Length: 87
Image 1 (cartoon, rainbow, N blue to C red):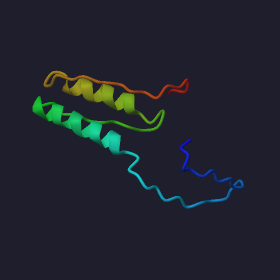
Image 2 (image 1 turned 30 degrees about the vertical axis):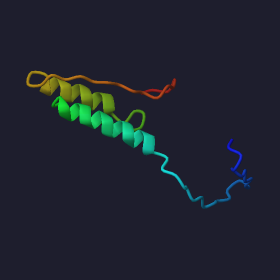
Image 3 (image 1 turned 45 degrees about the vertical axis):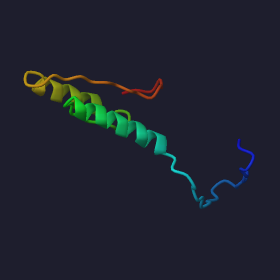
């Protein structure tokens, strides 16, 4: 932990309001912008599919690929969270 951070102990069920003084997603947004520039430069259309476990992400992608593969070149990059829980 950083030296200028305070540790606050709370009771179960107690709620605190915390003010965040830095952009927690700044690095992620910078990477996303860099990726977008690369994809745009090469004419690549990108769709990000997110959802909870078992929500049907893989099923819908399989259906879409089946219908679109004759007309478009398609690739799927899977980035699953490491877990033993899956549909």
